Length: 375
Image (cartoon, rainbow, N blue to C red):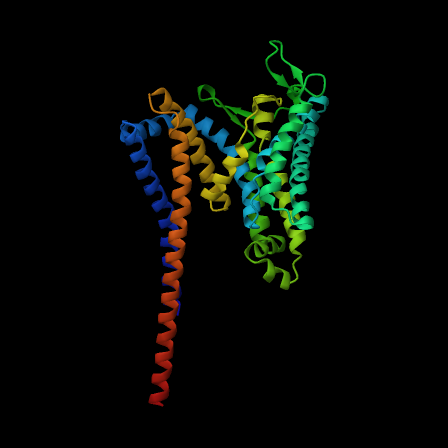
């Protein structure tokens, strides 16, 4: 039996490695064919991406982008683990960043007080905005997909209204940029100046802590077990005494609180204000990254780094004469290949495991019969 267990574990390891390898190979092949169809050399494109992406300034850019993308992936993954599709992460993080910027611009406290206050404000606003969808689902049965899409549109309208000059917004000297009041320098988050390579945002520390908390809570606590149980089977979880409605609402609130952190790296380390050119669409990027990382904190980190790498290098390809749509094609191909590869490997693994278990049970039955006959 020990040999059987060891063989199963070995096969699990091989299958776990086979899925990402298969996905990467398939993505490279499809991407190469797409680039070739445009009349360009795919090998030259891949070579340029590797050389440009390995430059020191590109590495800093990728790390900064990955910090934001990682938080987006974690926010989406919390919903995924509960079998909830939180499309509203984009609206949640924008609402959170806006109100955090308003609070930060209105106060002038010591950084050690104001920075945590702004982060807490962002998480609270994100949790409240996501909580609306959670409450609608458990009380009225409204799909979180529909409600969060609507809340994204409402968030855009609310921010647009409040950002008008004379309310909470103001025009710059040129009269072109509308923004909140700039944050005082005392409330800027720390950064690491690497010289010619650029400035590394210090918020990556908070992102790492958020990932650690995600791993611990979902994987090492009773609450995390209940959350995952509801995601697997609501009826089974309810039969074991878990309040399904409570877990749904709670997971949406936690997902929104995590979404509130997404805009903080940009706000506290880069722009120091919320303006009409604040990054958009990061919530939808988080969906792709959560899928890439299979909702695992390490996998999400790798997916965030890959997304940052692709964004940096494919933008450079445009300057080299390649079509600007290449980035979207590569990203879409990678997500599709990852989803398909993991599903193919999962099904093959289940089939192999069933075959092994059946063979072992048959062997045990044969040995038992032989002993009875001998006796």
